[in-house]
Length: 70
Image (cartoon, rainbow, N blue to C red; front, top):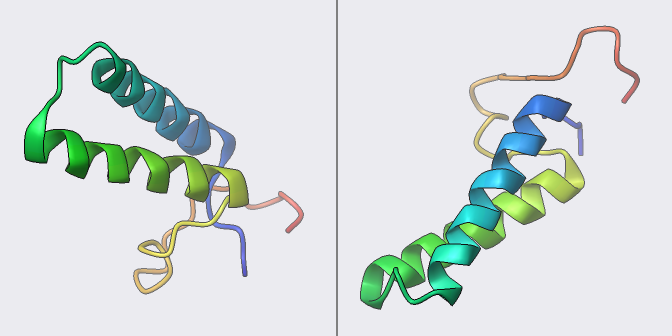
C-alpha cells in the first residue's frame, strides 16, 4: 500500500483518538455515540499506524511531503 499520510495528519488523528478514548473512559460519551466514536477512534489509530488512509486513495489525496520516501 502506498503511504499517503504525513506526520501532521497522523499526529492529529492520534490526538483525536486519544481525546475520544478519554471521553469514553470517563463516561462522558454513552450509547450509540460512544460506539460510533469508539470505532472511529480505532480506525484513526490504525490508519495512523500504517500511514495510509483508504478514503484518500480514490481522491488521490496525499498529505505526505513530495520528497518523502515511500
